[in-house]
Length: 216
Image (tube, rainbow, N blue to C red; front, side):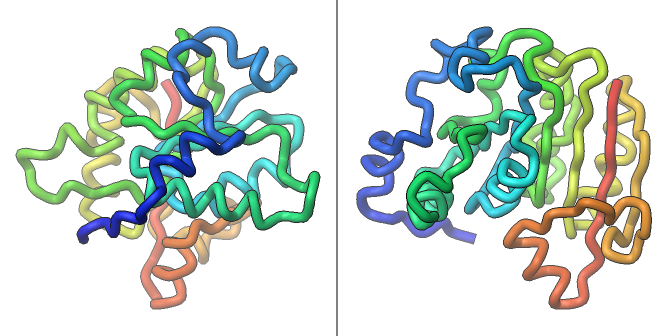
């Protein structure tokens, strides 16, 4: 699917107080950005921001950083915050416009407590397997930035990507703590679930949602 370019998106993202510019300069100093020592959770490929915004509103004791590489998509998340009542935007949420391949340039070792991967690009062709966010390549990056007890939470509607992840994650030396092939009918794993825009769309069409939780 071709991403529609939105004129002025680059400039709007650069000017937004919710977006961190030159995030590599914050490496190891994110506590100073949030002005506290709370744990940091990140969402990679945050899309239009519904998931991470609701998380931040629900959990003020956690700091959240949403990562999205496309300004035309990130702009939609910024507009969500701009549309809130004055003073209602959560102080525990910031965005970064960047490619996930650069995570280790932005976060130091053991700086992140949890990583969310929601409805990531499945990259269906085998020659593109290492571009998948649950590939060994990216798991090696997560290994650098996650705390020793850090976790990855992954949701998708793509069965092939989920099957790939169930094999790839243990192969990379990680442990799958829990998984389900039908999240919305799993009484345990559905607890506390926040739906993304994609999740609402896919589940309303009757598609099962797959989820796993992994740690080292």
